[in-house]
Length: 425
Image (cartoon, rainbow, N blue to C red; front, side, top):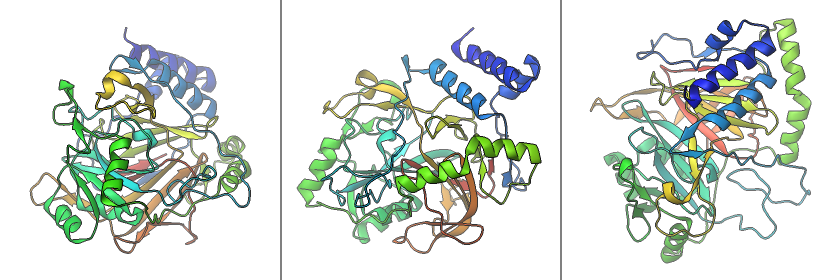
């Protein structure tokens, strides 16, 4: 019996202990949901589900971290410290909303790096947990890709690096970043060329090819040292980041305390109140981007550390290489780095108009416009809208009353879910 089967049985027994179900019933409930191969466009975009108890979710998340193994190395979570109250004169990162260390450069250069997520050697990525903001969307044939945004990075290895799409560029623009990529779609490359962007496309002065054969064409990496050298060589000494509206750490802490996630969950269950239009406690989130279990995503809220443990609907935890800050040179991350699970502080979802491009392979995604949005932070779900009026303007999130939603500080994953996909919680 392999580790994953042991984990399923243990999770089922744990669920049974908390819910009073039989082990057989709990085993069925503990299995990850596999998306339909061809989801119907008429499927509801939101199926509110408040499932399980927070104690169960914490236990399942810890068991997943302990048992899931990728590449022969065990994942070890490095949880972010829950922000404490800061002095009134504290400066905050425009990218993450976190308090900056005294003397930190608030306008340090930023980098928007195109990173693949295919099962053809792109995983595990390196340095993804060091990004302040990560945009996720389908790039081609149902396969997702990331635009990972870093400010003043220190990660020893970052990558792999792949090609650019126009909608990622439109999301990148407000961060005033160097666009780091390996070629791209014609419209995206034309926009970079004529739009005055800071541009770094496949360049072996600032990038290198790894030698790990299993990565196939997903073996182009960079380092923080190389990125800083690029900025120095080209005179890019600052960035004017137009980030998301953010709560301060103290405000975020107050939101979490005021809502009393565990207590509110009990109240919701007891009253069977319709919570589809209000802030509600959410222990689990499922994002269906189009039917492939390898790219659909599940988040489980870790109430103790106030983060969202990210896994795939196929059952695999989303593990990446964390390589530290020491300059390692041009190395394969598999050889010198440790695995950790992705666990952002905020999960934001934008429902977008999306269709297959004329080549029947790539995607057309409406990045400038508006649509439904779901914000998950501090254990809560906030339903509302997103709006982006131009490439230069930042995305604005509002609740159902039209009031701007401020995101909690910390790493933020923003996923563009197509109009034929779904959000379930």
